[in-house]
Image (cartoon, rainbow, N blue to C red):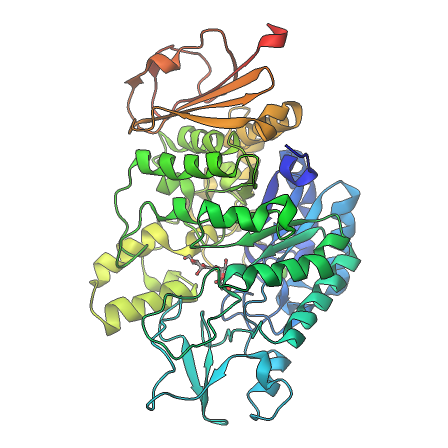
Length: 552
Ligand code: TEU
Ligand code: CA
């Protein structure tokens, strides 16, 4: 297998709004990130992925960009960015930017022009259609609440927006749009950024004929590969960078077409299949379902095996759109929280692929159980879904919906980073009101506490990152699932040259007995209990075992 730095790297995702406020306005900012770079470095990460920091009216927290070459005022200015990049590079950290070019903000000057008249030179930068029988051109529902089309009085046509109506979709069929995007990307890369995470990049190609009902939303449209190859030729191939495409509705076969070396598209993608195991067929995450370990294993193992030697996986449990993994697939009961956070970390980080750590995941941060009323939430997706499902359609009662939100809202990932037990958790100064409430558990779960506790989740993550640097098997080994139907324990092997790793993880809060739990000829690389009880696996116990027949 070909070796690349981005296969060996660990990525740490920073959600700037919630990481560190440096100027007392309750909003995280670039100078705040600069102050915390050493923390990220000490954890053993190599790359930072920054969520969007560009000028934005913040309808969708920066995913609605009004100027791709300016910094959001809340976060600072371009001087602050240049200084952040320089400081990061100085200590050996790379910075990957979010690239949001499926859509822009409706306040971007392209769209302001585009909507002003049908003859405007920017008209074709977006997707405009005549009404059909006085209605929307088709029956698409946006990924947030409401329809995917909005009628614009000035020119009496509808424009398409797969997300909110303040996020009009760009028209990738227009070569001028593509060239604008490529120029903008080159401008950032020339500044020295180290790559891009590409937002919903598999949605950029829409069907030619949009006036059809019953079509699925456009994922992996027929020209997406052509556009990415063009982007690669014009921009990406000229730099030593890392790229990851966010791509829901994508299976491993398609993922190989996006990530195989010889296709010259992207390095890796974020797939979503494992994020669906606890979702309802009709109401998705708003009516969470019991999930089965066998299904989670089957999905993730399928990606492991299919992409081996052919493409490359990204490994994630968390990001700014997902609830906290310890609350979702582990247990946030104080008795089991740290144990299960470590167990989940190990199960993920010893698979083949590039691991992503979302801020606070390395502390075992949990969902915000103190958010009990809709007013506690800030996310337009959450608020829109409540309006649609409860107020308008009456498919869920307020109580059922609040339960869904408590489990699934994106805001659980977006509460302020918990730096210490001081007021406002060290995220912003005492007396300042943070833009979103703190998780009430910051007094017990925080960086300061975990730095001085050698058994903390933080130190476990640090240890995993250090092992990755030492043992190539962690990066390049193959993956074999053992006992796929076991509903309590996830066991897998990695093989590379003469070495083998075996990971055994108990996903229950009970003791279970497995022959596979015995150490035998292996030695223990890592575990979340100090001692070993052989076949008896304690609640959420994980063991990472290692043998190398050359060094026997
Ligand atoms: O997310 C794309 C996406 O698929 C989301 O709709 C996702 O399914 C949802 O957030 C899960 O609840 C990306 C960004 O990551 C997200 O933050 C943006 O809101 C969205 O694109 C629009 O830019
Ligand atoms: Ca600030």
